[in-house]
Image 1 (cartoon, rainbow, N blue to C red):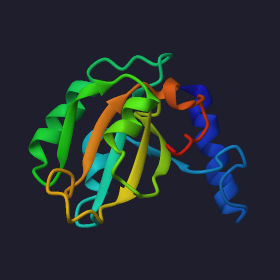
Image 2 (cartoon, rainbow, N blue to C red):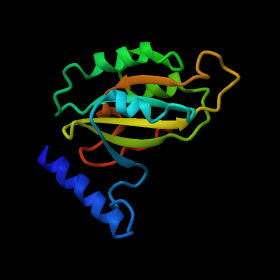
Image 3 (cartoon, rainbow, N blue to C red):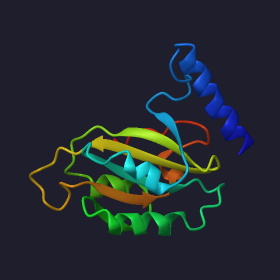
Image 4 (tube, helix red, strand yellow):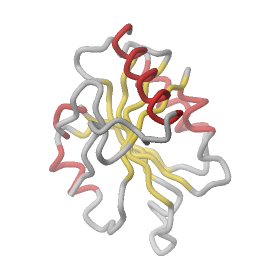
Length: 155
């Protein structure tokens, strides 16, 4: 938790200095939110969808996934996958028809729980199954996510 605080503080300092995010975050940036409601609320009215991946193995994620599923079921504007996707290939297979760019995040919940997520603009109106957004959970390590660093975009 201390390291996460220092890392977030360094980002704030970098941004305040006008230098942009730290160099180690090459394809995304970090957010610090208190819970899933706050994270998901950012998308309201903005036509966003999220590919949410599970917490890093080194972090205690008790209750996080269940909370995510609950919010999925309550947010009727989103279509949700409730199953865990085991690897990057499964993600690629699930999204094989999507030709979109994903913006990666490393999200800190309560300053400690780490979740990486991918965000994209919702522009797929020709497929009713996914036109309102997709969320899926999987293990961060399969995407090469390192603690304190941004996540790579799925290829």
